[in-house]
Length: 275
Image (tube, rainbow, N blue to C red):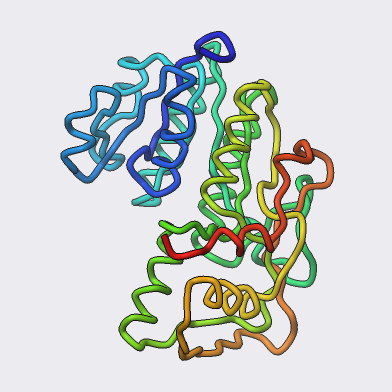
């Protein structure tokens, strides 16, 4: 066991990112997860607990596991998420425990003129971005060593919902939406889970921006990914939300990870060879 055999609980452990994190950590730590939609693999796995954030109290799961590290990758009902995180913040504040919260570049989506750094003020025009800000603000009231806010840009992995949707559209001759004016950074599940593993191992806390260190236009990125995926002639539907360039990018300035854990958007693209 690394890092003193820590007990880790991943809330949302059956989702795309939650499950990727579980697979990364389970060989090194005593790792547990929650699932909401029943699948045989989770029901039969002794490390997984069913948790419905609208019906169940998160305290029940916490009492069963008694984790030193909580990773929140919860999705679902927004009011339920807010309440769950209120309870989590309360739990963490009274115990020897740290929470890592998977947040989003959308906490900055009202600032479209430039990329965002760790200590920039958050402001969002989207319901999703506002939800993430609300939860971030709850956790920022905890002592710094007890929380990590992990802001994540768009995630593209071979099994990610975004790539799956693109592949489905291509196979069905449906257009792929691209945003030519959107300047973003990106990540994939492999890189992200390695970064989270490092943060846990080194007992890191505070705010981290976990995306590529460089920026790319959404349409260029998708087209390059498509070239990797195979010999298709996809139909692109260009979506212009504004006439100007719009940034949705979270770049690290203060809390940089070691070189081997940094990633360029080109590396994320090179990852996309059809398995």
